[in-house]
Length: 304
Ligand code: FO1
Ligand code: CA
Image 1 (tube, rainbow, N blue to C red):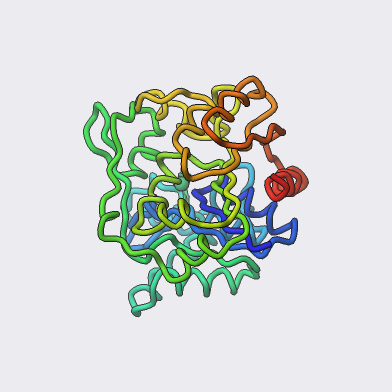
Image 2 (spheres, protein in one colour):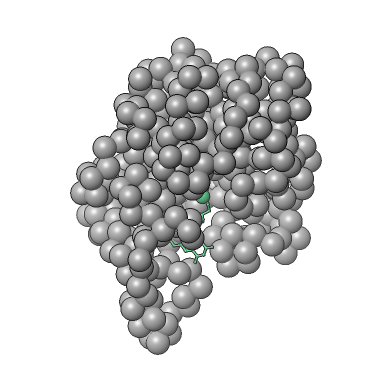
């Protein structure tokens, strides 16, 4: 099956890994609105989380970066007076140095991503949703914050009053993105944050329309289980933006875009309400954990 995953970071990476293990012909379309420039380097956290996870290099415990990292370069940069609030490991820094050098030499982000994934032995196609710059800005009671300032710098403690995807109106889909949605057999909306990860993918010109119009079976996996986010601030953000913090609240965001909602066993009581939105429902264990759990959920998604 040709399977395309619309992904943010960890949730998308893990489900993509499961689909890869299940033998899918896989394309992962990845959010880039978390990207940040630090120390003169272009950092693409979600592309790297997907790439490292598919390459078997991810630090699974921490959720980002490379397993077994060392921090010699960051320590040295700190001694030289750089602000080192964003924890970049030595091996991860190599990725950012190479990416930045190739972007400066004129390559597109999708070219560079194809080179990096090939070098690391990733079989799937990993596509940034756009080669243009999009940046999530977070409106909070403390003012408008850059995404990583909000997420890492302030540990996503501020209430989110609104989100701006700076640059998204001018962003064009990267080569292959629209075809990956249109020509797939299955499109999976990953259990990623609907506002921080999925919306800045759907908001790029043509992507939402491609998803609305594709003949693929469209399956979303809820990132909310039992009223809580599996990881990160999704529950807080749903609350402050006025949505119900549940798999049903997430399903409402995807009406017209998704044929099947995969919800957790804990949320079985919501199945009828989700069906009433016009979606099919699969109730299963959606918490993936390691490789066996990822492959199991992937197979459920493919069966859905
Ligand atoms: N997340 C943190 O909470 N603290 C960090 O110091 C941090 C460093 C980091 C470095 C490279 C990278 O690719 C990701 C990193 N992340 C860090 C995670 C990342 O910023 C966020 O998880 C996502 O952007 C939000 O999904
Ligand atoms: Ca992310």
